[in-house]
Length: 518
Image (cartoon, rainbow, N blue to C red; front, side):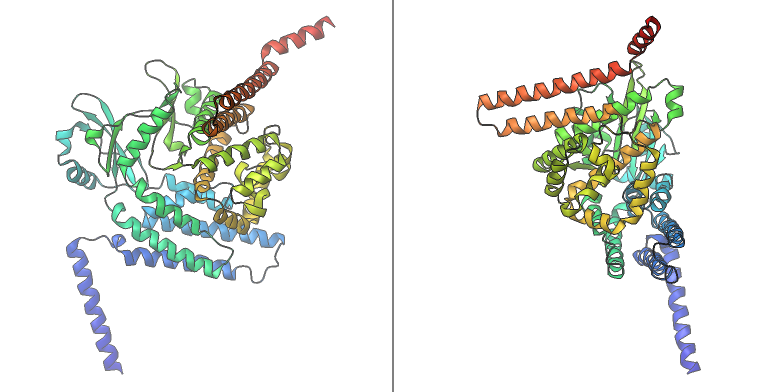
């Protein structure tokens, strides 16, 4: 027996030694091996699952001790998940960032922990960057650029951006894909799918397969930088009537599926109040313009930039005109909304703003929420059911309400999970976009301002009228629709003027004068 054991151990040693020599001779990074990445992900999934299965055995459900312990389990599980994403990089970081953006859908312990992944993305070496440029553009850096900064301006899960100067003197931003991401992404998505199915088998209430479906659909698009360039040009043309919007121009002669070269644009992140104060940028103006942009994208055109985290939305004073601009970056992830979906979504938001409960139920059900329509309304608006009943356009957000919503995200996680599996796939990226925009508004302290609801209402009215005109068969009917649209927009403008007048200094002076005369 001992001799057999010795033979087996000797054979195992020889195999390991030869494997190690092979890997060393090929200069392979262990992290590139699918078996290593899968093993790491499986181990972390097993540890997290075991923690949730065993942690609450000796604690009564609903007690203070139970909720305190659950918060601790959420936190340490989120930290393990974050560390896994950092270790496996690429697709794992992308999925982690997506989860970190769902502020009002997941427990706060997860979202706050996973948010750091936006600043923990890996960097490729300069040798790897040069190799990608050499393979895709067929030239050395010195042949393409006068200068090329070796330290990236920023690194993300799929790529990093370098500042460079062309031979004609123009400054550009060169976005270069991490060389291993393309090869690993499909395998990583498969790994995530297998592990999520295993977790769903252990915890039937955990139904997050929508996450895999979205990754399968969106990852190939995000890895195609030519698609990103086309999206950038389409949105720039679509929103060209907004003078405050800047979308960097694409240099197509220096762009491929893995390289995107664009005009270089500087600015501060949209959530950086200090930068805005330093450069005399009006916070309320930025928030209002951001709302105008996204209302137009969502309700009028149905072509939506779905990754508005602060690193992708910059603010600045235009170098020429000195007017305030919003610079929109990273156009890899867009959602195209189908006309019927977009109309139901428009009418749902109109119902939410007005407090029309029958409309809210009708359009929520048409969007797939079913009996979970009250939860859907709260998830969509990040408001309490009390505020939804009153009409979110007339009730300001309070700190207590915000805390209530975040607490409920943990309490109703199974129901939220079920809801996300019910609604159309188009809704998922919209929910993420809503949460990212709300996060920006919360930082800027402009959340739920009356101007944002007025802009949304204006876009909804225009979108619904345009849709009705496209279906109308007679010129008379189209004229009726246009007149009704003009009347609704005029009423909205009068209401906006009334709000401005009520808050203006002129009214304050008149009140003071009347009091003095009295």
